Image (cartoon, helix red, strand yellow):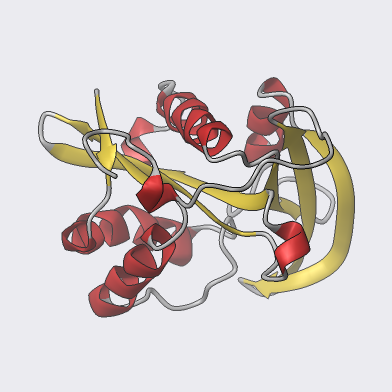
Length: 191
């Protein structure tokens, strides 16, 4: 397994993974698969401040993970939202753990302290579009439930809940260390 920083040229391959989750699941609340150009823009915008990592196996992208602003006001700079997607046929192989662990290590080097996961969950029983799998995954990675928004997402003719889970990557001290933007880190020959 090779881990590297995504580039805008990865948009088509990354979108190929994401399209399944848009069309076949309620894991994302997007209804329409974005265009390759839109996805290219998402990667470019993320990399201005945060990491966007891809995992490759035999030269093929099989998963990706990135961080984004939790909120845009300066007081939230030490907090991010994380996202992880793996190819449909690579689920439950340890790839998600590999991506999350490397993303968290990178965020820690940036002096990010709070990592937050916004997770869609069934409103009651699991169904063919959504399970509690992501919740169980994050619990194993020491994330804790901090809030539930009830029936806030509507997809496939049914209502879904959304939860927030959080994990602390470090100690909260005053004064806080400055957040180092991802492009300024010297990682993987970058910076």
